[in-house]
Image (spheres, rainbow, N blue to C red):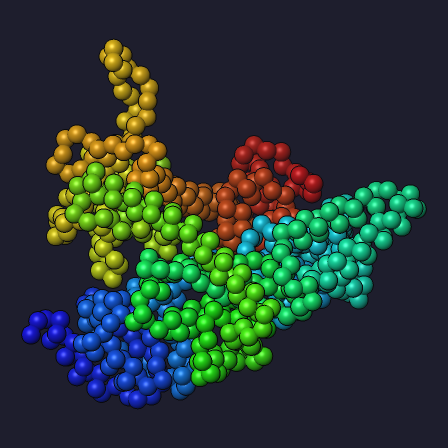
Length: 634
């Protein structure tokens, strides 16, 4: 009996004691890392099915080979197990689960109805705070542009609550006719909320009625020869029509909010497409590619991955009135999904495979989009694979490097030394795995010592996946320092390369000519390796190095600005460390604070106008600027 068989027998013995109740099971690797999370109505029966020697699904076979222990968490109901599974997948990002890699939260337009004078925000989290949320949209730019249009067209305030409460007289926004100045009582709450209601009608897809009203007002003003006001209405109409042009009409009679899920895939993976339809208009879509899903593998039940996708997808996003599915999940699973949504506070959600011709047309549209985006994705993916294969050949690696980590060191004259770690998986940057290192030792500008500390700290994390290739920003010296660390900790088997620019070359006559060439140095090899500049391999590696450089400098500047801010503001009376941190977080740099006006500084929580004037006066005096904090229109 082999070691794997012995381990499976041990697991069977342990699983025999699992309860037959709902819960979540956590499968762990030899290092104790969670590699798969699943939910079950009956834990023992579900987990025991993985240990069947006649498994057909290739992904499950590979998973079982890497399981060393299995733990579980009990829940009261199967619906709670669904919710807990989604939460644990998001937290631990297990290797063998399907997981939403695109963690950018959708942008929404939030209307703060709980405020006395509501306003529109860009929000990326939907909260139960009394606000109304419109969306989701696919572009933050579109959201900001729409909010700007609403504020200007309906004269809705765009200032923060703190700024509004501190006003003694109307600001510049009111003076240019873009706000009715509720801050100083120039409009009643009742009248202001009428304007807000008109603005919200546009977001609620009554936009054509809004356009007609605006056109009537424009014509009336033109007849009265109030041409400047008429021009403003004309610009508002043009802005609305630009927004509407970007939205496809699929059902002009529909008043429901609908999401339609489609998919397309093969043995290379599966792309899941979600169309967001609001009142008959497609306002956005989102694609997710999963290498873990093989639609050609008949051993995998598609209902399993689809339910997991739905539970994760609607963990942070608005749940619509209707969700159309690409396959029929069956009565029991649909009932369970509704229980999950009800548990989250959504009691009137229809989840179904479309039975009508209108619903089928929407599903066909989602599947068509999924196929198109799948082909585009795999085309890019094939290029990445070719690039990674070229990296393997050129750098003499045993395996294609699926995980590449790049490190850079940044400091200013030996001070505030920091290190950065950026990661590419399958040739694509993965920002979830970026890390920053603030050096503990005083290296005094010694890049080699700094690099040794950063690599030692990074490789001490056994719970992180090991890199298939390390790239060090630097030449032979940095490379030797990195290789020395790998040998010292017994990991010299991890491939490492140094990347440096060669800034001069000689032409065929022997004359020196200026030219920049990227060179890769390998341990034990005298001559460097080069890649063709236009190749995919070159773009992957140079992109990693540039990203590591940017990430390190960004962190270094933050620390330097933080230190600079603290030192430059130490003598400002009434300004403590907490406010200093808030100022830097709000403005990003000391220079930004110095170039602002005191009203903008007073927007920071806890900073009064009097203190803002003192801060600005102090910074301007240090810079040699004229000390005049009362300038509002700076």
